[in-house]
Length: 178
Image (cartoon, rainbow, N blue to C red; front, side):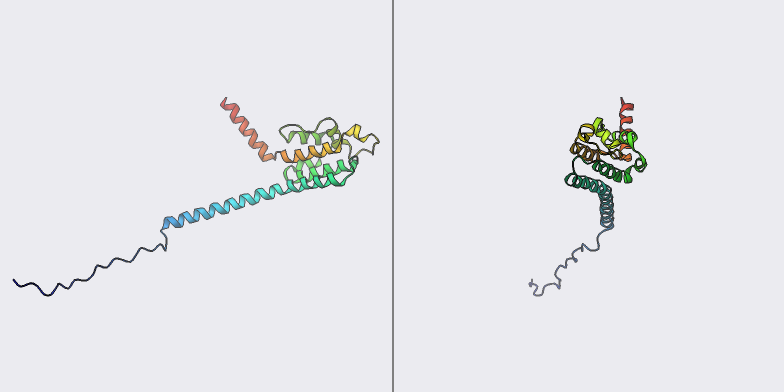
């Protein structure tokens, strides 16, 4: 037998082209859409929360400015504190703007978990803006620094109507569960 001198005409193996990552599969497009929507919703929610808290920050800053720029026995400072608290109430508690005197104090005490204004501080907010200047202002109305601190605490802890409703619903569900 004679060896075959010629080899068979075979071609080299051709591998298919690599699979491209573009365009992605429909599942990836769906995932991308969900992520974009989630980011937009989160950004909208954060912006809304930031804007709602802006009034609180502004009022706290005004109280701090008041602390450094008023005579500590001035009855006008009590009027300014009332104005600042009512400025905050414009956004969250519009019905409270018309309150004055004891009704105003009751509203302030009921809009936090624990009542803050009592005795001299309550008297200072309820009466001092409308009363004439007194020689014994501190003995009758107390220290203005304490009143400013209470106003700041109220601004930080005041519960908006939505938060109060949520707390009431949670309290109702826990009492039903027991």
